[in-house]
Length: 491
Image (cartoon, rainbow, N blue to C red):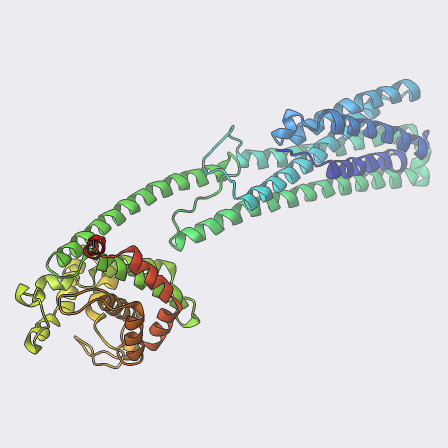
């Protein structure tokens, strides 16, 4: 990946050259023997050559690829300052302290320039990884402590400021000693104050720019982790925290991801155990009933299709969340688990039930709810058990209050029971029974429409009309094996 920004590099080099040249030509009181044009020309040539080397020879350097621009530019500026200092020493007989100031000044600008380029590169890299969602999820590369980096940066900035001001102070004292007339007329004091002020503003400006970019990077990293954690707290434990660098934040993210992997594996094991229990219980119920396993699969899918459609309505959006719809889907197979408590003479009767037998059959919602309540008391309450019990006890209630076992009406019937009621009836209508043939989808649809506002919640019926093609596809996909075998027989 290319971490070289040619445009920004050029701008920062120009800024560094301008500040350094302005200091030498307008601020430093020792360089009055040289004109501003001469100094700016020398500085422009030096910085121009340094930039050309950086642009054409070092743009793919390993330090650029490793995002260590500060190290590269500091070294490059120092090497560029050597011929400039040598030139001033040979041609203008600069004293040692002035030569050291040239070396130190250019090296310092290299450090500031490289640090800004390095932070910009990391910001760009972070944004690109965010767009592509290509963050690492575990630690990589060599560890670089974030705390140590910040302490080192602050220490280096303080040391630089102290050293620079100390060098300026010593130089200016030496200059004033050899120019006593400047003390008398007051111009010397003005020059010294101007130089101190200029250096303080320049160094302060660079420090503020570095801190602003650093804070932007930290904000982006922390915000991305916060957003991911918010997704996880909403139940999406498949999400993982981004690991941007191998530092303290990266280590915390990596350890959190390891913990989430373990949690997800444990949760998956719990879900598998729960699903096994559901399948076992529903299989037990169907083993004593004329209905088939395909009925359980179909009603499960019908309820899910209806719930997804109704979730589009503002009225139900808050209730029918993806997590709740998943609970409905998993709980639906237990809607008739109470049939295990119905005597075989009633449950397996190959014909229409008498009024007395039907009263016995009407006990199965409560039997199922009681069984699930026992599980809830012994194992502890859970959203799954609550929804399963709710479906079991209410899926035979009717919108107009004529259902059983509690004659609930309207919205007193939980949405789970209202959805299951339509799904259960539709599947019973399109399925062959000993007491009736299988109805077509259109026939079943007309019966459900007749029951709108009576048997069924009108809004659930409206949702059914919106997804009826899905009902047809579900019925085709999960067709009873007996029907398939019958259709396969030769005419």
